[in-house]
Amino acid sequence: MKPIHWLAVVPFIGMLIGPIVHNDVRPFIFGMPFPLGWVTVWVVLTALIMALVYVIDPANRDDTP
Amino acid sequence: MNAALVLIALAAVVALLLGLAARRGRTMGMEQWAVGGRGFGWIFVFLLLAGEIYTTFTFLGASGFAYGLGAPAYYIIAYGTLAYVIAYFMLPPIWAYARDHGLHSQPDFFTHKYDSQALGALVSLVDLVALLPYLVLQLTGLGIIVVAAGYGAVSKDVAVWIGAAIVTVYVIVSGIHGSAWTAVLKDILILVVVLFLGIYLPVHLYGGIGPMFEKIDAAKPGFLAFAASGQSVAWFVSTVLLTALGFFMWPHSFSACYTAKEARVFRRNAIILPIYQLVLLFVFFVGFAAVLRVPGLHGGDTNLALFKLVTQEFPPVVVGIIGAAGIFTALVPGSLISMTASMLLAKNLIGLARPGATDTQHVALAKWLVPVIMLVAVYFTLTGNATIVTMLLVGYSYVTQLFPSVIASLMRRNRVSAAGAFAGILVGVMITTVLTFTKTTIGSVFPELPEAVRDLNVGIVALVGNVVVMLAVSAATRSRVPAARAA
Image (cartoon, rainbow over all chains, first blue to last red; front, side, top):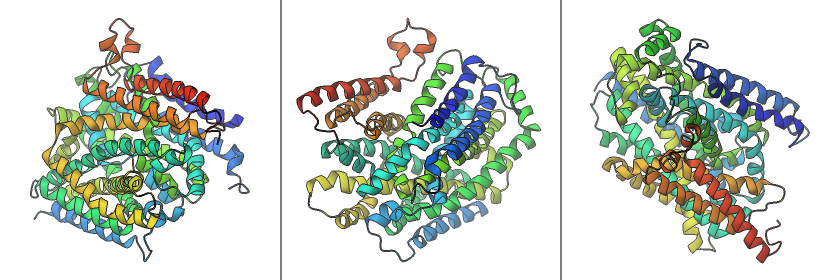
């Protein structure tokens, strides 16, 4: 594992910690019940984190297959 | 014949023509038929991998899940997203190994990695037992959609027979190319339909998404957050983790990754697929919109929530378009599943009895087996066998048992032996079977444990048993045959 790969652990923690810490309908997030809104926000953050990993990961440079 | 039915029939014809046209003059040998000549770019791979998101199970099941159970449905969005993160690391080496060794199926991977035909055969059996109910589910969903969207003008049996025939024909002719081409139209249609329904229905019926959830929360307090026991937060966390591990262990998803032309395809998809997963949110919105509008559906009938609401709110033309999108969600995964099942049956099980057979002979047999697999699936669909429903629940847990030995085999030095992998998978599958059929939960065996432990997904027990046995047997077999599996 290259150091940047460890960033991929963040979505696992982020996605799951919300309902563990706060399992309640309120406050609403973007009109959605808290657990659903939390998961939704983390789906977007996961995509952003993986985009960052992709850009930094040397495996994706043009000179490597 | 009503307008809706005309549109659904049209969709069926288009699916067939598109599936046939996908062949485009190619000779369908093993390489083309099973893995698309390993030449698919990111869009086709994206659609094949995303195929899991929009099967009839998600279209009907996710809306029905949200409608019937509320909060537990949230896990569906979470686990897919995390599965793609795992895929970023796991799929490139699997793909590279498959390319270098000319693999065509998931059992091929085990047979080669562990140098054991017995292990390949065991994986084939696990795969078949998991795939068949999944195929039955697609056909069952197809029947439900055609009956509901066609206002009952066509019977379930007729719909299932026609759907199965269409898939059989284009799978035989075009193989995975047929799945990929029809997947393009499927995903465009479903995207439009789901976004429209998921936005229009809450706004039209409740005045917006926020107001909709306010009203549901007022009418059913607690429905939108996790329960204190049962499908609690502990259940959510353990289920998300388990299913994320199992996601790419489905044999048709696993071997769909062989079709990519370069490894970067998977890493790029790890960015896009989570966003795509969000479309499921709108499927949930439809399910939630139905909660106060078409109340009173229970058990298996919750799967009808989407179509009950849709037929109540829209004219037949719109219902027809939704139905047309719906049958694509059955046909495309159905084609991939039936192709995968017949492939591994021909090559990895029947192939054992004819060791000299070439790939050409394997693929010829596989094409003959497509209608056989389909007939079996149609039989179970029409008889509505109760066992098949239970089998479906275990299917996911079964394929998850393959995860430990796949990961071990990707390590620089694999410490797991073929015997260890074999024993681990076997034990995992057996534990899963016993626990499911006896409806055992951790809480029912150890009622004195804290709630958070009692509610853990019982699949964890099977996975832990699997890993322990796998490591123990590997240690024992390695000491007897030193360095036998160093490669």
